[in-house]
Image 1 (cartoon, rainbow, N blue to C red):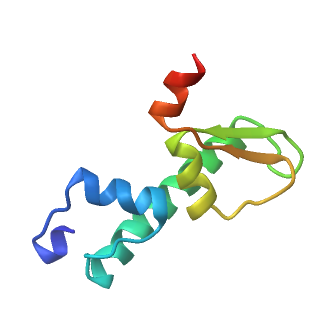
Image 2: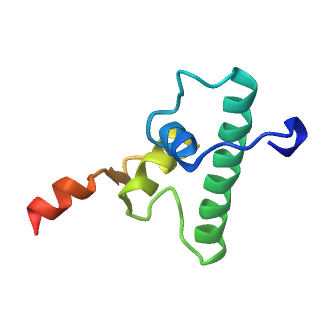
Length: 95
């Protein structure tokens, strides 16, 4: 965002993380955030690989807000990877 001399609010970024879109942002800003989120997801998967996990066969479960980011912006989508989404309000009802 620095290249445009602009900043985004945390709420704007979280909206993109949750839904993959943002109704009010220009496409150039959305593209930058998407690229950063894809880089983050790649970093997470690379850490798993560095620790010896086989992403094709190891059972992996991503939970919470991170699950939305991993599913939406990740490149891995095998039967061994699960994504569990749960809002704070729903979680509080469960406990």
